[in-house]
Length: 441
Image 1 (cartoon, rainbow, N blue to C red):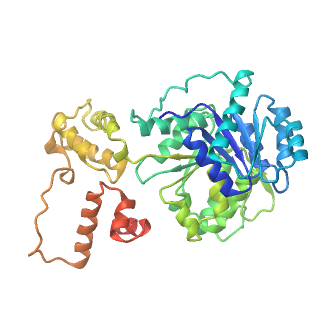
Image 2 (image 1 turned 180 degrees about the vertical axis):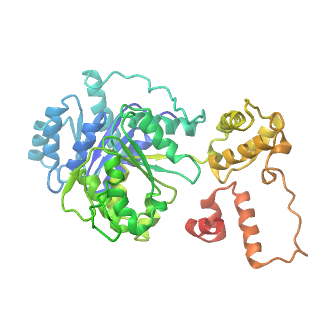
């Protein structure tokens, strides 16, 4: 199902209420932005198109009434719905005077929320207060192909965020193409001419991450012979892609949180803050909620990163896209290795469509690469790697193997039975996903 056209901004310092509102609105196919403070809400309003504001009144530092007054003057066409746990006649009058179009009291039912949202959006449409409805931009991204519903849903989200600087968190298994999503967000939008800097946090030693990200002054630490800018400064005005954000140490996470909140960073060894204007796209192939529970990832940073969340589907959920991807890789490596376009035989393609691809698109690309090298003309079944082909599971009664090999075979059988679903495989094996990833390495 395609997402509706309306973007709804949710503002509340209560994470439970934010999650409840987002869950209900997503069930009705709305797209949502979340903010835990008025300051963050204003930043989202400045960088994104919003069709409806839903805000609490009682919040620390700056309350919701000031946000209503701000939007009433700066965004007069924006309908505003107040959700409050402190109802009163005076409070209701004050909210309406501040520009609210409706008022909802906590606790509320799902039906009451639905009525209030539709009423606010309906009034806005009838008064021509929102933009004319139209189709989302065509789903054209040079390095990404697909026609499956899972791909189209992801592509629609990319189309929504490409022209604003809202923070985006990209989630997905290893090999699904999270960096391609980040590049599509950057290069298909209006900031395409600005820098795009990709950083793999797991590839930088922990003791150097802070200096590499934020820069350092001369003499800030042993070996710092000169002042150097970091990745944040290099990406100023554009997009900074932080891959494997879950591997960042807690000290770096604290500085990242401040950078997101204050839009400024401080070099290692310096006391002077430098203002920055950039978009952060972070990515993770692990469950950050698990990391929060294990005290290895900051919960407040997680909510700052998930202004917009994009889930990249694994290849087993995009079976319809395998022929398109395979043809693209065959053409690419045919020209690169054989100096001519190549094709793949139908029976070989059927094998590719049957395989569960636990390594996702990266594994598919590597397999096609090898097949192109092995093929004489078009790619036939004989040119495909052996592990893709049908296997017979013979008994192993007389096959004496080490405990390590036995464990390896058992994990492989469980992965095959779950079609490469690591979460289900971990549950069957009685271990967590992190342990399974380590064993697969």
